[in-house]
Image (cartoon, rainbow, N blue to C red; front, side, top):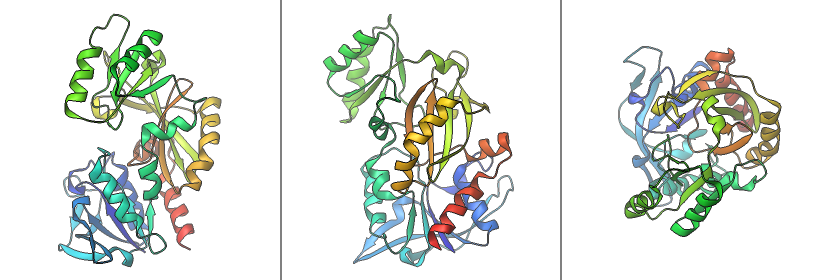
Length: 311
């Protein structure tokens, strides 16, 4: 098959941790042809959806993991699969790319389905499962957020469309910075904020569960660095082996059928203690860490699903 990856510059990724690299590697092992382009080179041209990029070859060679061919323009309907894999921010640039890729429906399989990627942002899709999530408020209005903090005392405050742990603050019962943080956030963005009750269980880790076509295939635990609330690996979180609990399976069984129905083939969900906090569909991670800890070929499972869809 002909496979295109829409993602951030592949030459900059860590081949030992990056999920997009691992997906490309597995596709190449299966004999598929690879093409790479960045989202700023996606275009609509008089009825055609095109991209300008490079034929791609990957290998596990430090500093030489991605070999790019000549820069050229392609018609994306000539491809069997397109991976929507650029990292957030989930802004209008990201949203526009989903609109353009959506026009390929019926001609090319886009993974994950761009219509539902656009309509299921990480911190909003979870609202469909109120019985699984911690107490949450989404608002731009300061008084609403203050009321939520007064009720729950110890909260997490973060941008609604943030990622990678950026802009995440814990405001405990002694904190006096809510109004200043609200002023800071609303000064440079029109987006709402999301506030959630702080979950002390995060000190033991924020579990990333990977689902393939709606079914859980394993989990890793991300433990915050000492003195840090955030467990994201971008900010020093430590991955470790972990087993899924009965509650984890209960959460996956509740959300899995909806993810599959909406064409979300590769998804990473975040669970702290007993609560589902995010459903990551834009550019989920965790494949390589999970493969390392559990000795299971997760990328193979993903491609088995995709190849079955194409067939």
